[in-house]
Length: 307
Image (tube, rainbow, N blue to C red; front, side, top):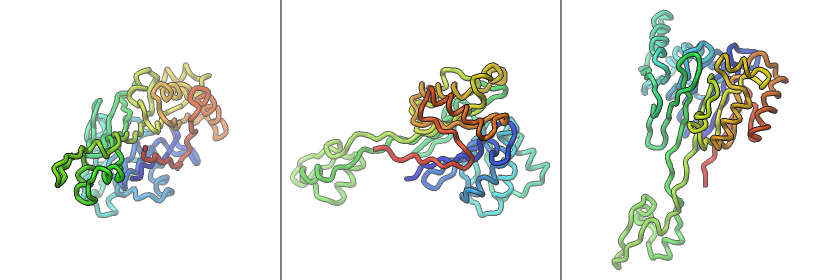
């Protein structure tokens, strides 16, 4: 079952040539989940040749232009394909007004249902195999980070153990794999845990942008396989970062370290940094958290199954 993360855009405040505004996309077992939709999101998605017109849900962090200006175009172009399921859009309370006013003022032709759902801290989407959680950040407007978390998977089934216990191959194996104990024709009971390994952890992706640093963020993103996190400024501009309620690359790395994440992907860079100067941010983060990636637009990251 695939679990891929695509960096759609990495710039903060304004788009640059080769650096669109902040957005990322998760493709999990064929479903698509978009996180933020800054200017240029459509272009980047098209360049990646993703089936983005059938995005299942969109998660908006906050109501600043560099995170939502790409949304109206996505809504309009999604009408060019047949769509039976509603499009769910999650985000701050004002997001619903933004979507409705754009539909009205731009006279959008929309041939599918749009459901805009205000988020609060905690569970925002629940599926049998995974869930999406929101957590509050500290910015100049109400702002949320998100974590997509898979449920634990059943342990590995050991056929040799089942055979050794005299369980015939067939339906009884399936029941054991589903966690059921079975009774054999001779009356013996075989416990599921006798032929199954322990539960296996699911995968986790977390997304953070536009926030001042605070230690509790690490708990929200704890044990993420991949953390996309803003690192807008270097340490020499720490005072500027704090006044605007943003994080430095070093602070992003501290979040990754304290949260025991697998990989930190920096994003949402200030436009003041040229392509070459972004290496300053990378170096500062790696001094604290070595497994840091200086994320570029349209990079792809795979999260493999564990065990």
